Length: 195
Image (cartoon, rainbow, N blue to C red; front, side):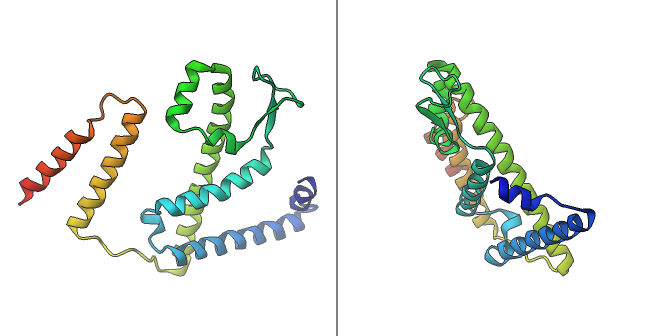
């Protein structure tokens, strides 16, 4: 890791200029590749694409933030039996992670620090990628946009998203989320009103 970092550190302003230009070319090539694979990426990346990108970012985040070891009381200990890796922290479902707050607040706090730091990192990388894609499209003078969906398709996608968000909200204990039956009835009533 140290050797790789040393390679990245410029040795002069000339070297800084060269390395900066080279890194910019790399970013542009990645942005072009993403657009070739998914022309509508900026309009909404698929869940599979987001998951794959997040997996890649998790590899790099873990390289930059090596796992720490803890003892059974969740006190940092280089010889402790618990390794707090990113994979371990993300293995908890949102619900299980929430329950951990009451069951073991110290463990919850340590896991939360890792999860929060990674989520911020991943969010920033997605923002960087979208910025690079916009720049590449702007420089090429053409933005490939997905064809506009017809209204029925749009509604189907929207209601599918609503159902998913409702399920997630219920799992988090959000009292404002309707139950599945009520939501389905409301959607059915919406479609019936359009006929």
